[in-house]
Length: 122
Image (cartoon, rainbow, N blue to C red; front, side, top):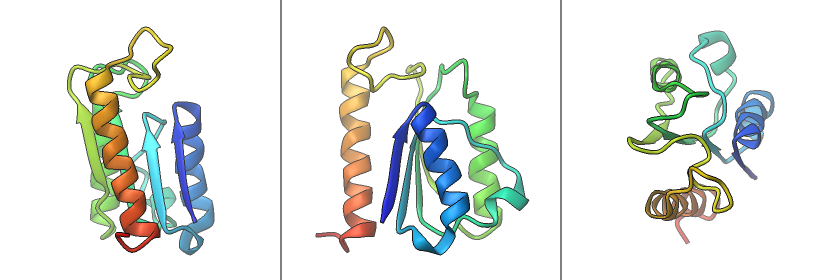
């Protein structure tokens, strides 16, 4: 079982990873709120893919780097992709921040990640 979410759903995916621990096989977080708190992160056992915008005003890149470092320090380095020129919700085609090329690339990364970790690369 895996989780995936965008914006608030990304935050829910992060929270689910902390709550479900070993019951998850993969976690994908699209620009959801994350943190670098070692105590909170210690319960995450599944591989994590984080997708963020470099110009996101709500999820600062510094916070993303703290999250990445925190999981890495615990021996579970996440895969983090920051789209430098993208803002929040860049993968939402109905929003003002939509960036098709970045959204398509992020989706390809997310589906490959889920396939690898939930279907053994099939």
